[in-house]
Length: 272
Image 1: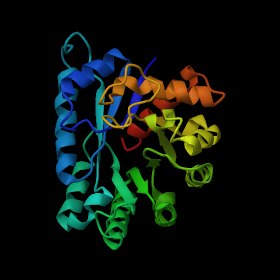
Image 2: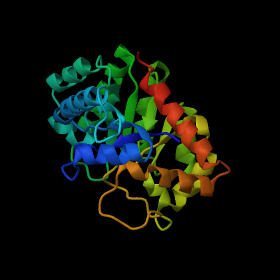
Image 3: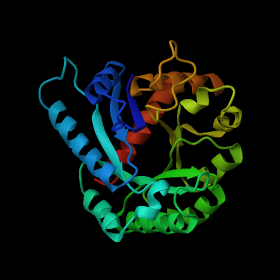
Image 4: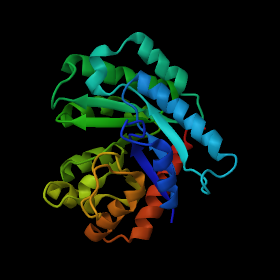
């Protein structure tokens, strides 16, 4: 089996990156997407991907060939108030890099409004325009702003190579709305929480394999079906998400693994 973890906060200070990568590879994780929240983090993700991809292209590291790293570059809605024109230009400069995957995280978060809604809307739309102009996919964050986000996305989706709904936790109606726009759906360990994920567990029964991505969102969202419980999630636990999805649908774990891997690899190569 081979896994593609389509969303990891690999630069989180809780991680020993080399240890996480070795653990991932030993669990058959072949690819990892590093997700970024602002320009500073995006540049660090670019450097991280370059370093470990170069390292892995040579001799094995600790007797394993490390996973291939990809990264997103974007402005998370939490940081929209601090976004400048220089920041947006920096995103453009990163998109030609071989390991670059998509613009993001970008979108709207009206749950806590760390940035003003108006500035969130402006920065989100600017990133969509960059993606359209340069033929890039987008990696979407949304919280308590679904209708507003899909209304804006609808204006640009026809000109985007792809859009990913990162860490989808919504309803069947919201899933169907994203699917109608041609979006890919990122499913995380949230699915494994029987107490909180009732709506999502119902919704995924309508998720076709050709639109599925699996992501741990590590170090967050440790799957509840993994024992023993640990403080931090890691890419090595991605199979637990597939196990739960198989339990809820008619798909086997092997079918889920293969579809999610192939979908992500296709998107990773879409700009090349």
